[in-house]
Length: 111
Length: 196
Image (cartoon, rainbow over all chains, first blue to last red; front, side):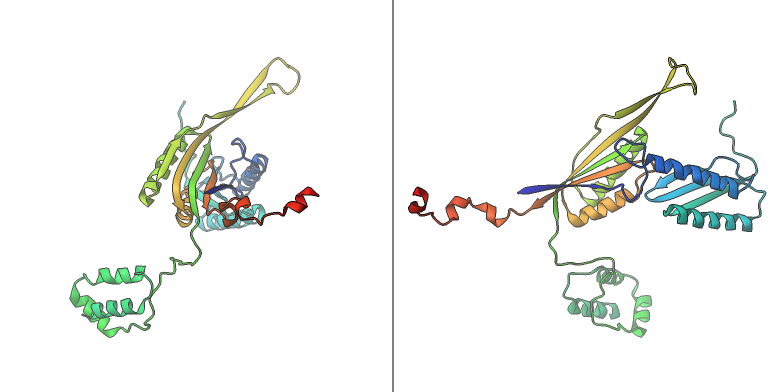
């Protein structure tokens, strides 16, 4: 019987795990992350309570942002949809933004 | 009973093995008769063709057989890889895939030594390292469609920041021109030609 070894990169198609050994695209991910953070800082002016958490699942970019309750919900939803659409078009990958509204920034540790 | 007649009609009409829809019909026969009978008496079974499930595809191509399917999972966090190992092994067991072995290859550490200060102070440096932990999962004797289903499921649930490499070892039939040595079947060369 002949055996045929066919290696295939299952994580490919733009799933960015750039810092792992023998994985490519670390610099690209850094640029994308920096752009997304700046964009969100500008779109939610003064309302962003904490730096947004960026995760990548497959090709999609999931952004978890904490926003203060200063903005009315209609405006918040519009900004969320607009940022999702624009970022997806710019980065050519699905971007999903999850917004949590808080009255004050969440405290993780009291020193 | 109406449901029984429907079941028999479906069974006679179908040339394929029992499909998902007809299996569901069969299960519905055991429900309380009154409500089901009343509902089915009014409705028409419009076609006599077998109801095939659109999710199940039947093709005439022979299945690709894999001797070994090797998944190498890479990540920065060992705890994440351990939890993923539990998940992948459980999924394989549920699907009835035989696992050859599960092991952790040694981690690789990539170190960078950089200058601590922006200007001068060459003797003071800072070291960063990137650790990559591995998990190798080897599955044996798996068919192409099972492999496709398992890989899709396992890859959709890959955690963030974790990469996977898949190596497949196919089993192929020995080609006919190799089965017998050439010198048994080749025509015999005449001796006059060899002398010249």
